Image (cartoon, rainbow, N blue to C red):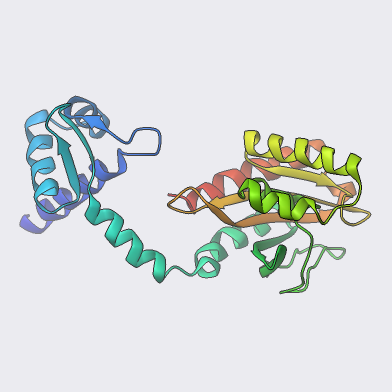
Length: 242
């Protein structure tokens, strides 16, 4: 019984920490109590314990709570041992199961994008990319997603790789739209007969250094299929952010 109570207490503490998000960085006691469906008295005791251990900070002037600096320290430790490929593999495997298409993990290297992990599609005719092969950032769903979330200075450097003013203006509009909607869809843009969709992977600082893409023959990327692929992609990539 005592062990069960201890486990329940740990779970409640984790529930409190999960209440905070980028949108809600500070919360009142009432808000936290309501979110975890726990009495205020119990919530107060748990917040006090978390505060003592540096996991929660209370602003005495506003009476609001926010995450403590110790979590940032622990996050930094986790970040140094973070292996994006190992973390992404279950998500990529599941996306392949749901779509039967090839799923790639891309990152930026020397002003290009490279594929660092790939789950080959199940279909006889499928799209494959060589691991480590440099590809442009200004073409294709994966490249555009990565480029959309980089700094203006970085983007300007990539823009100079293009010698077509009209295409450059289209690219700038595309990047703006990608940031607004949170994903990219391209049809026969980098390769004839190929379509792809891609979504960014955000780190704890809101930066994007990786993305996951689903690619295959354009004829299979119908409007209905793209909608289904996107729903699965956004849901599963979100798990990498949680």
